[in-house]
Length: 469
Figure 1 (cartoon, rainbow, N blue to C red):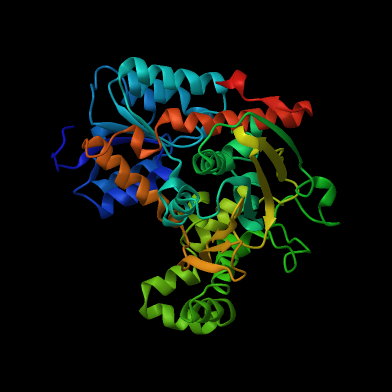
Figure 2: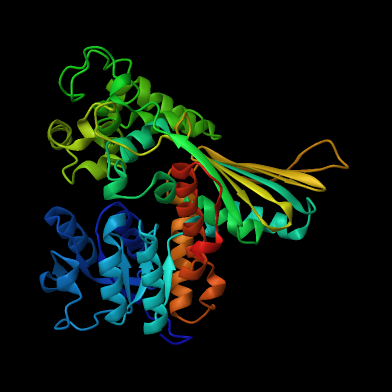
């Protein structure tokens, strides 16, 4: 596309699941002048048809598989392809799309294989294609403010960077115990699947490439040995711990209780009141919901994570999914093998160190950051229930709040749509591709850091990053 062309960027989608349908598809629906999906591929009939209906895609442009979509007889249908399949299914459709003439929006991680990551990057270069990797956190107001503070020299020279990725107990249970990321062989190592975001931030904010890494971690809690006595294989099979187990599946998927409880911690008094009302006065909510569709959706939870387990969001549809599918399994008997906690320590040039703490046993979803410099300290939290950054100068004892934002229940704090805004500008040649910050060359560095950390953990030794580059 040419600079000054204000027609919408056209795109095709492979993988009409959570990210493809509810993030990038939603952006297109809200910004029809910027992005338009013209074709979709997904083997799940319900997901494919739902995306078709939302985006007015005809049957002849809806495909059961990505290879049919990218077959030569169809030709190039759009400007870009969005690759939103599962982690271990990125490689082949990405290569096919690049060779078919598409620029890419590629979900992170690029691939669970280092060799495949490298080949995708090499193919893009050979075919003169652009790849925007979905490291969306760079596009949030919070992390851009952190970067601005570090670059401005407010805390002098960075000495130590400490980053914690706190995955809430319910989110970890949903995605990494019962869900698509529960097994490394079919997805990715935990640090790659969840924290290539965070490693990208560490590399970007410090402004230099890591030299080496040490790492340790384990799967400690979400194991059969920790299952309560007498617990069945499924939550729906009259579990005796249904009232006391935080991971009881019907509580999450039928009523959204864990997410409503986030609202109890919100800065807004109104949000706290509504969350309390929804949790404690369901009979009154049932009456009021007759007059308000939004309240109906809260009463019979119709948002994430319920939208992941089935497309039939009725009570009966969700119960069927819990009785038959993986999301109704006992949290301790789900056949998962990914770590539930890991710590990685990186060395950078100039004596700088950086640590990433990653775990799945947090009460609140979000990230915490501490950056210690030669002249001061930056502290911040980036959570669903609010965001805040404080700055302390060593000459002053009182920390100053330099950034504050309210509750964000999704969209990575605005980063999802921020990435899309950047992508549209790149496609319209309004900004330089590499300056956008999420090109594949930048993204590879975080992936190298993740692969090296996992090798350091399994090999119980410090690993140099040089061989990965």
